[in-house]
Length: 305
Ligand code: NAP
Image 1 (cartoon, rainbow, N blue to C red):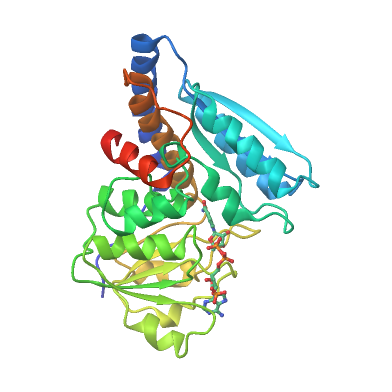
Image 2 (tube, rainbow, N blue to C red):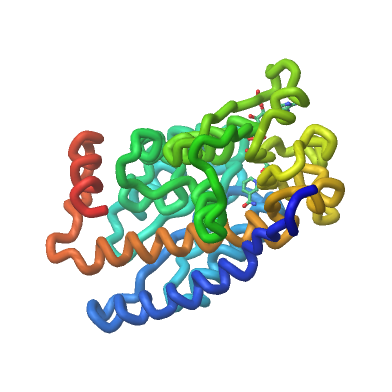
């Protein structure tokens, strides 16, 4: 039998984080006279994306920052979106840029993500940011994976030497969380739609991360007793990617859905925006914003993060 399972309470931790961020924002404003801005960019009219962007903008305002909400029409082209991102990169008052995923299918999302200046990439979506995180170098981590790692650290859960199985390999979730777990010395298996014998692989996991995007796809009987179960999924009716209700009583720890990973994603985004603001607005030498060369940009971030 396992000990009493630990509920990884993302809602409570995110509230604590917000409280501490309010003080940091007040300090920034006092020292610089500038209210930091998070720019959120939404393209099209996907109702879920509209809700997510609204929640992020509201969280930003709750801690005393401003949100600059840019809503572009569905027919926006890649070129127009790139131009919008360029403007935000060049705007000294903007500390962070969030481009809500997914953008409409005709837009080259990867090109647009990578146009975000890495020092303003508070949602951790650029290839440069991902690469730096993977190499253990300073950068803003992808918000959901970084939120998961904050939860794991907050509850002091064992990671080093453990076998983590991540189901999903998306650029914003599966891949970065796998790299972060590896950096914390887990032995990591990454699974995807072509993986064979998935149940057997999950059965070997001390840590399971559900990042597959299918309701209750990861079955309770795949999960061993005393595992740490992280469910990043969220679907209608408040269920995740894992059969959490059937496994939670015999887990070492688990994230509830809702109230686990979701609030930590937003708290991480806001925290990284505050960190960016502290770096940018307190810096005497404000960024040379005509960054047109990746190497130079990487050097700047390395110096300032
Ligand atoms: P995604 O881009 O659709 O990626 C899903 C991944 O699951 C892909 O790598 C895919 O493999 C893999 N997959 C699909 N079918 C599979 C199967 N039968 N067996 C094994 N792997 C399979 O999704 P995502 O953006 O990473 O999101 C995943 C989940 O997290 C969703 O439920 C989403 O709502 C949630 N999410 C939550 C937050 C939050 O803030 N809480 C943020 C982001 C995402 P291939 O690569 O082979 O296609």
